[in-house]
Amino acid sequence: MKTAISIPDQVFKHAERLVARFKTSRSELYSRAIAEFIARHDEDAVTQALDEVARNVNADPSDTQTTSTAALAILRQVEW
Image (cartoon, rainbow, N blue to C red; front, side, top):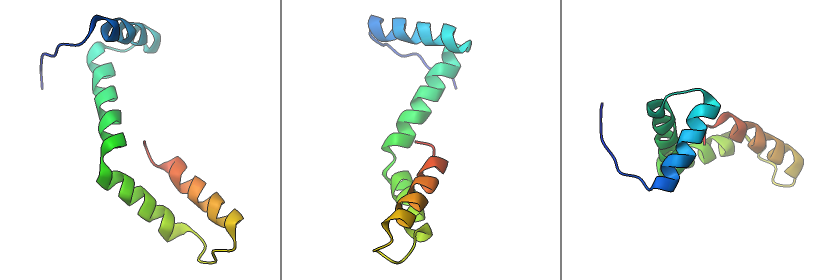
């Protein structure tokens, strides 16, 4: 889909630097940025990620090392 947007000059300048650094197109950069923003603010996705952590942790609340390790492993798999 094609769309036109207005953004502040400073944001545009920073984006142009990232386009050059990542050797990608503006469209790809903006698409990735919006997708990341949506993922970070999608309450259902966050809830699902936390539910997945809860399903995969040890049921013994005194075993904090195993719980922390399991939670970290699951969170590393989630795209934030």
